[in-house]
Image (cartoon, rainbow, N blue to C red; front, side, top):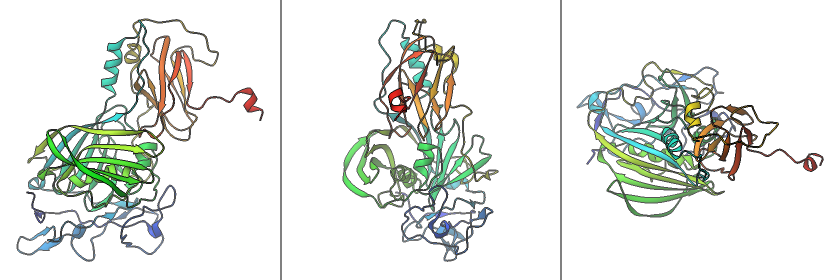
Length: 432
């Protein structure tokens, strides 16, 4: 059993600051945190502020043990996490090799109700299957017993680009979004995770305690799990949590991730040390949802010393933007061309490009266009993308949001053509 008062060396002196007067960027509203601890009373300074040591204990609420000369987790349990300010500059994290016990998960986001390709002789099932594999929404998750989380994007078709990361630590609420190469990071305050992932903008929204709807038991990866369903005004999340000793304080961090995604305060008591979510399912109140499924788990006693530092060495704080891919197109021209074995003539559309198609997103949020059931391009709000590659012919298309809270009806797309997320008004409508 993982010893909850395990001795740990902590070279990082941190204590989180809450946003001044509960305000943050985006909506100007703060997360509905439990027992916030404001550490400042003056207006938010314009320059990034370093995190300071706690005044009532060691770093992150730990206690100093004079016998060992180290900071330890107190007998009463791990320290209560505190909100991370959006302008907080964290010193480089440092952990010793003996602190690098943990688990590594390989998991995947699964979209629901994705439309199938049409049935026609020119449809190339092998080409579509290859594209489906290339755009599989895979993640590698590292959880360390000392209380660190690292999520690495292993997919072309996730909201954050390939090899970008999200990191978190147990004593702070919030995340660091790291660019590929780990040269810079942006703070994602608690309450902004859903908009960051779902809409690619940092907008802090209120969090609620959440209600436990039901609990039970299940099995996943041949392990017994504790199954719980939590509810918020936005929807429900069902978690299957397995007891994994090596995960220590890292396990609750992945639980917090899914709980906060539906607007529940991540300090929920349902996120417990040594419990790892092996499955998560979100159902939105307005319909739709997504699932997260862990395909494999490896227990590690020898993680590299720099495996999940928060932040990693050399990373610089930035206060604008998020990691981004250049154009949001996920497949090459050759990979798109392989969707069909031959061309089929289609009706001419005067608004269509000469080749390929135009994806026109008229909504006020980013949307992903699926072609024959494969995510092809994500288009920012009120923007267009021109996609070259698919051969002339008839395709099945559908607009979807990444978190599955907006799923449009299936449309037939003739290529060359234009596919709009919001149809143009009819002449009669335009005159009203």
